Image: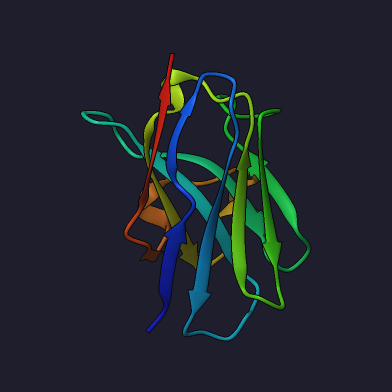
Length: 129
């Protein structure tokens, strides 16, 4: 059983920063993808960032490129998402996701929701103007 637990969400003002963390446990640290998705009320779940674990290649959606940074700590088995220059449109529930088939590598992008097998419970990010 693979477990993903997010933390670090909260409320910030426009232009502020937050760092989300995802603690992963329950599987061998093999080559696959770890990703962050977000979902605002009434909106589809959107992939925002992913990392290919084997070589650390990162992928971002156009909406966050240049503002968000995804990284991994292989020793601690954590995935992080640093979010800078936050805007009200970044307000959403943020989810950590993982898959053993490396969709980010094969697509050379974050990939879609249905390509990720394991999910955390989410952490809320609210950006006020």
